[in-house]
Length: 310
Ligand code: CP
Image (tube, rainbow, N blue to C red; front, side, top):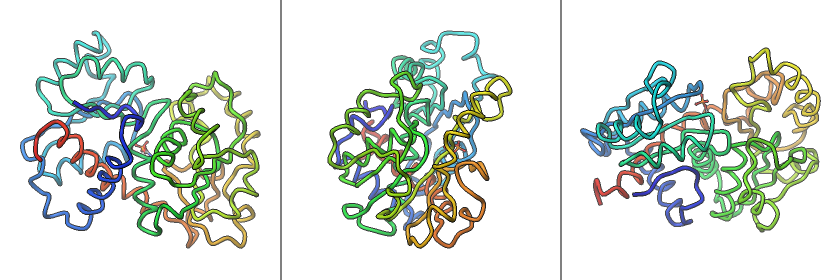
Protein backbone atom coordinates (compact mmCIF):
# COMPACT_ATOMS: atom_id res chain seq x y z
CA UNK A 1 0.00 0.00 0.00
CA UNK A 2 1.39 3.40 -0.97
CA UNK A 3 0.86 6.51 1.18
CA UNK A 4 1.57 10.12 0.19
CA UNK A 5 3.27 11.76 3.20
CA UNK A 6 5.40 13.82 0.78
CA UNK A 7 6.54 13.07 -2.76
CA UNK A 8 9.88 11.54 -1.85
CA UNK A 9 8.97 7.91 -2.54
CA UNK A 10 7.43 8.43 -5.96
CA UNK A 11 9.44 7.98 -9.14
CA UNK A 12 9.47 10.54 -11.94
CA UNK A 13 7.39 8.14 -14.05
CA UNK A 14 4.80 7.78 -11.27
CA UNK A 15 4.58 11.53 -10.80
CA UNK A 16 4.24 12.05 -14.56
CA UNK A 17 1.44 9.48 -14.65
CA UNK A 18 -0.47 11.37 -11.91
CA UNK A 19 -0.09 14.65 -13.79
CA UNK A 20 -1.07 13.08 -17.11
CA UNK A 21 -4.15 11.46 -15.55
CA UNK A 22 -5.11 14.76 -13.89
CA UNK A 23 -4.99 16.48 -17.28
CA UNK A 24 -6.92 13.62 -18.91
CA UNK A 25 -9.68 13.71 -16.27
CA UNK A 26 -9.83 17.52 -16.49
CA UNK A 27 -10.42 17.25 -20.25
CA UNK A 28 -12.88 14.32 -20.01
CA UNK A 29 -14.62 14.72 -16.64
CA UNK A 30 -17.72 12.72 -17.62
CA UNK A 31 -15.65 9.66 -18.56
CA UNK A 32 -14.53 9.25 -14.94
CA UNK A 33 -17.78 9.84 -13.08
CA UNK A 34 -17.97 6.25 -11.80
CA UNK A 35 -14.22 5.76 -11.14
CA UNK A 36 -14.60 5.80 -7.34
CA UNK A 37 -18.22 4.70 -7.09
CA UNK A 38 -18.96 3.42 -3.60
CA UNK A 39 -15.63 4.68 -2.17
CA UNK A 40 -15.38 6.99 0.84
CA UNK A 41 -12.51 9.37 1.66
CA UNK A 42 -12.11 10.59 5.27
CA UNK A 43 -10.80 14.17 5.28
CA UNK A 44 -9.31 15.09 8.66
CA UNK A 45 -8.68 18.79 9.35
CA UNK A 46 -6.69 20.05 12.31
CA UNK A 47 -6.08 23.36 10.52
CA UNK A 48 -8.26 25.71 8.47
CA UNK A 49 -8.75 25.17 4.74
CA UNK A 50 -10.78 26.34 1.78
CA UNK A 51 -9.16 24.76 -1.29
CA UNK A 52 -7.99 21.47 0.16
CA UNK A 53 -11.37 20.70 1.67
CA UNK A 54 -13.43 21.78 -1.34
CA UNK A 55 -11.19 20.24 -3.99
CA UNK A 56 -11.00 16.81 -2.31
CA UNK A 57 -14.72 16.76 -1.54
CA UNK A 58 -15.72 17.81 -5.06
CA UNK A 59 -13.16 15.42 -6.57
CA UNK A 60 -14.74 12.51 -4.70
CA UNK A 61 -18.24 13.60 -5.75
CA UNK A 62 -17.27 14.01 -9.41
CA UNK A 63 -15.53 10.61 -9.40
CA UNK A 64 -18.65 8.92 -8.01
CA UNK A 65 -17.42 8.57 -4.42
CA UNK A 66 -17.94 10.47 -1.18
CA UNK A 67 -15.75 12.76 0.92
CA UNK A 68 -16.39 12.96 4.68
CA UNK A 69 -15.21 16.14 6.43
CA UNK A 70 -13.86 15.46 9.92
CA UNK A 71 -13.08 18.47 12.08
CA UNK A 72 -10.33 17.34 14.46
CA UNK A 73 -11.58 19.46 17.37
CA UNK A 74 -15.11 18.05 17.31
CA UNK A 75 -13.99 14.47 16.69
CA UNK A 76 -12.70 11.99 19.25
CA UNK A 77 -9.17 12.39 17.90
CA UNK A 78 -8.89 14.94 20.74
CA UNK A 79 -9.72 12.29 23.36
CA UNK A 80 -7.94 9.16 22.20
CA UNK A 81 -4.77 7.86 20.60
CA UNK A 82 -4.30 8.87 16.96
CA UNK A 83 -3.55 5.26 15.97
CA UNK A 84 -6.77 3.92 17.55
CA UNK A 85 -9.02 6.50 15.93
CA UNK A 86 -7.24 6.00 12.61
CA UNK A 87 -7.55 2.22 12.67
CA UNK A 88 -11.28 2.59 13.24
CA UNK A 89 -11.57 5.10 10.36
CA UNK A 90 -9.66 2.86 7.99
CA UNK A 91 -12.17 0.05 8.58
CA UNK A 92 -14.99 2.31 7.35
CA UNK A 93 -13.34 4.32 4.54
CA UNK A 94 -11.02 3.37 1.68
CA UNK A 95 -8.68 6.39 1.84
CA UNK A 96 -7.70 9.10 4.34
CA UNK A 97 -6.53 12.66 3.66
CA UNK A 98 -5.23 14.59 6.67
CA UNK A 99 -4.25 18.22 7.19
CA UNK A 100 -2.31 18.29 10.44
CA UNK A 101 -0.12 20.67 12.39
CA UNK A 102 2.72 18.18 12.77
CA UNK A 103 4.22 15.75 10.27
CA UNK A 104 4.96 13.42 13.19
CA UNK A 105 1.19 13.00 13.70
CA UNK A 106 0.74 12.18 10.01
CA UNK A 107 3.27 9.38 10.50
CA UNK A 108 1.10 8.09 13.38
CA UNK A 109 -1.96 8.16 11.14
CA UNK A 110 -0.07 6.19 8.49
CA UNK A 111 1.01 3.68 11.16
CA UNK A 112 -2.58 3.17 12.32
CA UNK A 113 -4.19 3.03 8.88
CA UNK A 114 -5.14 -0.01 6.81
CA UNK A 115 -5.88 2.27 3.83
CA UNK A 116 -3.78 4.82 1.90
CA UNK A 117 -3.12 8.18 3.59
CA UNK A 118 -2.57 11.46 1.73
CA UNK A 119 -0.91 14.47 3.36
CA UNK A 120 -3.25 17.45 2.90
CA UNK A 121 -0.53 19.82 4.20
CA UNK A 122 1.52 19.81 7.39
CA UNK A 123 4.28 22.11 8.62
CA UNK A 124 6.85 20.42 6.35
CA UNK A 125 5.14 19.32 3.15
CA UNK A 126 2.23 20.21 0.86
CA UNK A 127 2.46 17.55 -1.87
CA UNK A 128 -1.05 18.15 -3.28
CA UNK A 129 -0.21 21.82 -3.85
CA UNK A 130 3.07 21.08 -5.63
CA UNK A 131 1.35 18.61 -7.99
CA UNK A 132 -1.25 21.27 -8.75
CA UNK A 133 1.43 23.84 -9.46
CA UNK A 134 3.30 21.66 -11.95
CA UNK A 135 0.00 20.68 -13.61
CA UNK A 136 -0.77 24.40 -13.99
CA UNK A 137 2.64 25.26 -15.45
CA UNK A 138 2.39 22.32 -17.85
CA UNK A 139 -0.74 23.92 -19.35
CA UNK A 140 1.51 26.75 -20.61
CA UNK A 141 4.91 25.23 -21.29
CA UNK A 142 6.94 22.07 -21.63
CA UNK A 143 8.18 21.74 -18.08
CA UNK A 144 11.60 20.56 -19.21
CA UNK A 145 12.28 24.09 -20.48
CA UNK A 146 10.54 25.99 -17.68
CA UNK A 147 12.06 28.21 -15.02
CA UNK A 148 10.01 28.62 -11.85
CA UNK A 149 11.12 31.25 -9.35
CA UNK A 150 9.63 30.89 -5.89
CA UNK A 151 9.90 34.19 -4.00
CA UNK A 152 9.22 34.34 -0.26
CA UNK A 153 9.91 32.05 2.66
CA UNK A 154 11.07 28.46 2.54
CA UNK A 155 8.18 26.43 3.91
CA UNK A 156 6.02 23.34 3.32
CA UNK A 157 5.12 24.50 -0.22
CA UNK A 158 8.68 25.29 -1.31
CA UNK A 159 9.83 21.97 0.20
CA UNK A 160 7.32 20.00 -1.88
CA UNK A 161 8.10 22.05 -4.99
CA UNK A 162 11.82 21.35 -4.45
CA UNK A 163 11.21 17.59 -4.22
CA UNK A 164 8.92 17.55 -7.26
CA UNK A 165 11.01 19.83 -9.49
CA UNK A 166 14.16 17.84 -8.69
CA UNK A 167 12.44 14.58 -9.68
CA UNK A 168 10.82 15.94 -12.86
CA UNK A 169 13.72 18.08 -14.08
CA UNK A 170 12.01 21.44 -13.77
CA UNK A 171 14.32 24.37 -13.04
CA UNK A 172 13.40 25.95 -9.70
CA UNK A 173 15.07 28.92 -8.04
CA UNK A 174 14.17 29.64 -4.42
CA UNK A 175 14.58 33.38 -3.83
CA UNK A 176 14.29 33.52 -0.06
CA UNK A 177 16.21 34.63 3.01
CA UNK A 178 18.62 32.10 4.48
CA UNK A 179 16.90 29.47 6.62
CA UNK A 180 18.02 27.96 9.89
CA UNK A 181 18.00 24.23 10.63
CA UNK A 182 15.60 24.76 13.54
CA UNK A 183 12.87 26.24 11.32
CA UNK A 184 9.73 24.11 11.78
CA UNK A 185 9.51 23.37 8.05
CA UNK A 186 13.17 22.38 7.78
CA UNK A 187 13.79 18.98 6.17
CA UNK A 188 17.25 17.50 5.68
CA UNK A 189 16.37 15.76 2.38
CA UNK A 190 15.06 19.02 0.94
CA UNK A 191 18.19 20.81 2.11
CA UNK A 192 20.30 18.19 0.29
CA UNK A 193 18.29 18.82 -2.89
CA UNK A 194 18.81 22.59 -2.60
CA UNK A 195 22.54 22.10 -2.01
CA UNK A 196 23.26 19.54 -4.71
CA UNK A 197 20.46 19.26 -7.31
CA UNK A 198 21.18 20.56 -10.78
CA UNK A 199 17.51 21.61 -10.97
CA UNK A 200 16.98 23.44 -7.67
CA UNK A 201 19.00 26.39 -6.40
CA UNK A 202 18.79 29.13 -3.81
CA UNK A 203 19.47 32.86 -3.88
CA UNK A 204 18.70 35.70 -1.49
CA UNK A 205 18.26 38.13 -4.43
CA UNK A 206 14.66 38.12 -5.76
CA UNK A 207 15.25 40.92 -8.29
CA UNK A 208 17.99 39.02 -10.06
CA UNK A 209 16.13 35.69 -9.84
CA UNK A 210 12.90 36.84 -11.52
CA UNK A 211 14.64 38.20 -14.64
CA UNK A 212 14.72 34.78 -16.34
CA UNK A 213 11.52 33.40 -14.78
CA UNK A 214 8.66 31.86 -16.76
CA UNK A 215 6.62 31.67 -13.56
CA UNK A 216 7.02 33.69 -10.37
CA UNK A 217 5.38 32.09 -7.35
CA UNK A 218 4.73 33.32 -3.84
CA UNK A 219 3.05 32.01 -0.69
CA UNK A 220 2.18 33.38 2.73
CA UNK A 221 5.16 34.51 4.80
CA UNK A 222 3.56 33.32 8.02
CA UNK A 223 2.08 29.86 8.53
CA UNK A 224 -1.72 29.87 8.57
CA UNK A 225 -2.21 28.98 12.22
CA UNK A 226 -0.05 31.96 13.34
CA UNK A 227 -1.37 34.67 11.00
CA UNK A 228 -4.23 35.90 13.21
CA UNK A 229 -2.78 34.70 16.53
CA UNK A 230 -2.24 37.68 18.95
CA UNK A 231 0.44 35.66 20.81
CA UNK A 232 2.46 35.57 17.57
CA UNK A 233 2.16 39.33 16.86
CA UNK A 234 5.77 40.26 17.68
CA UNK A 235 7.28 37.50 15.53
CA UNK A 236 4.79 38.38 12.79
CA UNK A 237 5.89 42.04 12.68
CA UNK A 238 9.58 41.05 12.60
CA UNK A 239 8.92 38.58 9.79
CA UNK A 240 6.94 41.13 7.77
CA UNK A 241 9.78 43.66 8.02
CA UNK A 242 12.37 41.06 6.96
CA UNK A 243 10.22 39.91 4.04
CA UNK A 244 9.17 43.19 2.36
CA UNK A 245 12.06 43.02 -0.19
CA UNK A 246 10.53 39.71 -1.30
CA UNK A 247 7.05 41.10 -1.99
CA UNK A 248 5.60 40.41 -5.47
CA UNK A 249 4.77 43.89 -6.72
CA UNK A 250 4.79 46.07 -9.83
CA UNK A 251 8.37 47.13 -9.34
CA UNK A 252 9.75 43.59 -8.90
CA UNK A 253 8.02 42.34 -12.06
CA UNK A 254 8.44 45.51 -14.18
CA UNK A 255 8.98 44.67 -17.85
CA UNK A 256 8.75 40.90 -17.30
CA UNK A 257 6.39 38.55 -19.11
CA UNK A 258 6.39 35.82 -16.45
CA UNK A 259 3.14 34.33 -15.16
CA UNK A 260 2.28 35.08 -11.53
CA UNK A 261 1.34 32.21 -9.20
CA UNK A 262 0.12 32.05 -5.60
CA UNK A 263 -1.27 28.96 -3.89
CA UNK A 264 -3.79 30.99 -1.83
CA UNK A 265 -5.02 32.13 0.66
CA UNK A 266 -3.72 35.56 -0.37
CA UNK A 267 -2.62 38.15 2.21
CA UNK A 268 -3.11 41.41 0.29
CA UNK A 269 -0.26 43.85 0.75
CA UNK A 270 2.04 41.31 2.36
CA UNK A 271 3.55 38.68 0.03
CA UNK A 272 1.75 40.19 -2.98
CA UNK A 273 0.09 43.51 -3.81
CA UNK A 274 -3.58 43.51 -4.94
CA UNK A 275 -2.71 44.85 -8.42
CA UNK A 276 -0.52 41.80 -9.05
CA UNK A 277 -3.38 39.45 -8.12
CA UNK A 278 -5.51 41.07 -10.88
CA UNK A 279 -2.60 41.55 -13.31
CA UNK A 280 -3.09 39.96 -16.78
CA UNK A 281 0.00 37.83 -16.06
CA UNK A 282 -1.61 36.28 -12.98
CA UNK A 283 -2.84 32.68 -13.26
CA UNK A 284 -3.67 32.36 -9.56
CA UNK A 285 -7.32 31.33 -9.92
CA UNK A 286 -6.58 28.83 -12.66
CA UNK A 287 -3.92 27.41 -10.35
CA UNK A 288 -6.45 27.23 -7.49
CA UNK A 289 -9.06 25.58 -9.74
CA UNK A 290 -6.45 22.99 -10.67
CA UNK A 291 -6.38 21.74 -7.07
CA UNK A 292 -9.55 19.84 -8.04
CA UNK A 293 -8.01 18.30 -11.14
CA UNK A 294 -4.70 17.44 -9.48
CA UNK A 295 -6.57 15.83 -6.57
CA UNK A 296 -8.42 13.61 -9.04
CA UNK A 297 -5.15 12.49 -10.64
CA UNK A 298 -3.70 11.73 -7.22
CA UNK A 299 -6.82 9.85 -6.05
CA UNK A 300 -6.76 7.80 -9.28
CA UNK A 301 -3.14 6.82 -8.60
CA UNK A 302 -3.64 6.04 -4.90
CA UNK A 303 -6.72 3.88 -5.51
CA UNK A 304 -5.02 2.13 -8.43
CA UNK A 305 -2.00 1.34 -6.24
CA UNK A 306 -4.37 -0.04 -3.61
CA UNK A 307 -5.77 -2.45 -6.22
CA UNK A 308 -9.21 -0.89 -6.72
CA UNK A 309 -8.77 -0.93 -10.52
CA UNK A 310 -6.01 -1.53 -13.07
N1 CP B 1 -3.48 26.28 -0.88
C1 CP B 1 -4.21 25.64 0.07
O1 CP B 1 -3.83 24.58 0.61
O2 CP B 1 -5.40 26.24 0.35
P1 CP B 1 -6.26 25.94 1.65
O3 CP B 1 -5.37 26.24 2.86
O4 CP B 1 -7.43 26.88 1.58
O5 CP B 1 -6.66 24.50 1.66
